[in-house]
Length: 206
Image 1 (cartoon, rainbow, N blue to C red):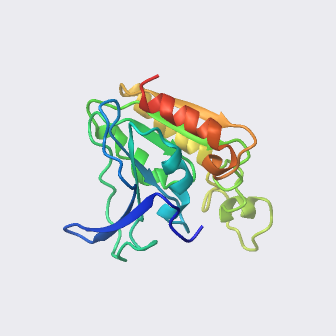
Image 2 (image 1 turned 120 degrees about the vertical axis):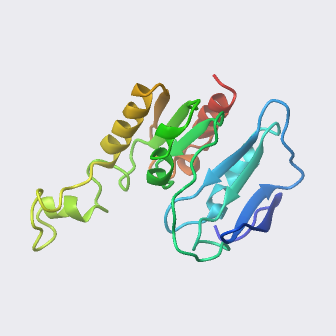
Image 3 (image 1 turned 180 degrees about the vertical axis):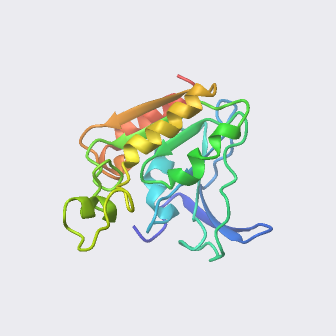
């Protein structure tokens, strides 16, 4: 997907650090029942990836999608820390997004927002046995010269994410993990109706 869909508008928004490209649904303003909803893309992607889900979100919400720095039409600047959630926001994690930026900042938020973690059951990229993890490939004998687990351990990404969220829950937050069957790295594309149902229920506080 490399073009704007009908009903989606784009605007470059200047900030103190860089100019960010932001997508919105034309004519939408925040409704009384729901605040703006921010969609964040993953690696080697852009905000365009979220357009179908933005258009499907109920009109009570104002969906926005940003291009991270260096992607899409956002400026290319050195990376700094992700600012995290604002108190009172409802968090949504999708494993195709850069969750390491977002969940790491959750422990300092007070009050702690409820977090929904959506992931595809068949995701081969973000998994405990990811073939995109060179250390895991090394453990299978596929990487010559792999120095072993002590020097270069495989990264069980699902287990690691769950451990961070368990720590968040232990610190007074709460989260819900939803595994979407017959979906891979992009569950909002593979199973859009299920993804939308889970997302809107979470945003509504169900």
